[in-house]
Image (cartoon, rainbow, N blue to C red; front, side, top):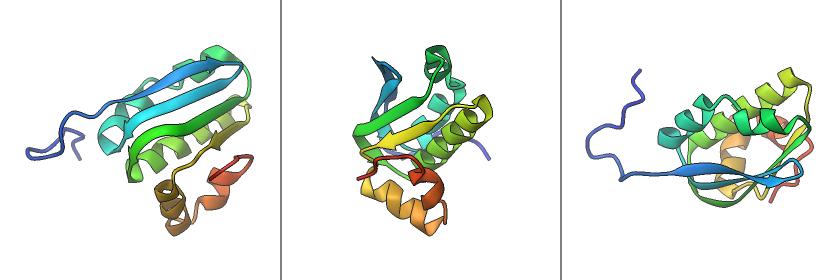
Length: 115
């Protein structure tokens, strides 16, 4: 399956992870299947450089889809493998609904301050 954007797909989207200091990171922008792959490809670099537990604030995320959920689960897997705790704050309702439908809500909410 190709990750290339098909003709007629929505315009250019962008998403970013910003280091807010003290293990806090801000995820912002449009986090969809089109941008999540790029963020996943960064190999958790910002988190790895921090060296401790990680908190990711999603309050600045403008749009999400199932790609967002896959990205968060991927980050959780990285944190577990690295022996670190990771929690999410301000999880968008759409991500929570997708997590519930996918039966991964408990995984996503473990240690998180959701909603």
